[in-house]
Image 1 (cartoon, helix red, strand yellow):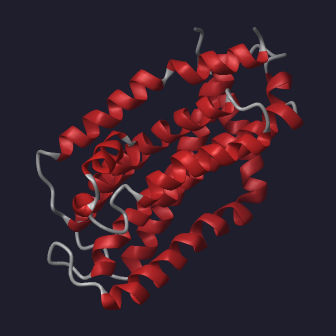
Image 2 (tube, rainbow, N blue to C red):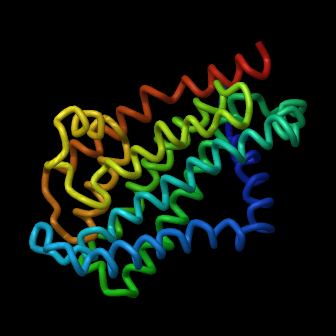
Length: 253
């Protein structure tokens, strides 16, 4: 595996394109969390009792930071990566230069992580403006979002390396991303769900990101958060080589 500074050329190529379409990209990931905040927080929240001593909207809002970042990374490294790979032939053009395929994949992972971080920051700014971020610990959410971006992009590019066609991404979003979105403790505590669901949720990266963002945003910081960080690091490390292998098998071998 040969990875050098040339991954930044791939990153900058994607960033240059993003600068031309940033408004349309940001609007989707900006407005949707706000709709959830309005419908679930201000709407449903009126009928929900306090959770952990907090009004429902205060308890739920930090989870939207994590979900916005997840959707941004997942969409970037599935549909968008597939378009660049299969239809635009961007990967083929890049690997005709001194940049190799591993550097292309790592560049894609870094750019997806950047978008995850960017959209997470946008939601932090919005909920801060609404008075839903009472703690300065929220600044530590930024490295957490970077870890989330790495985890989700690796997972997404792994799927991109496997799918037979663009329609197959529906399986990924229906069977992986949407269940994570619904069962990672964003909208309700998992204590009341069957134990099997709780165990599956624990192994998903979003569960740990939600735990971290909620604790850091609300200022309820404790040593147990280190286990969440450790699990994210293990997830990223174990999965790292798989998308590189699958993309190489798909495009070269």
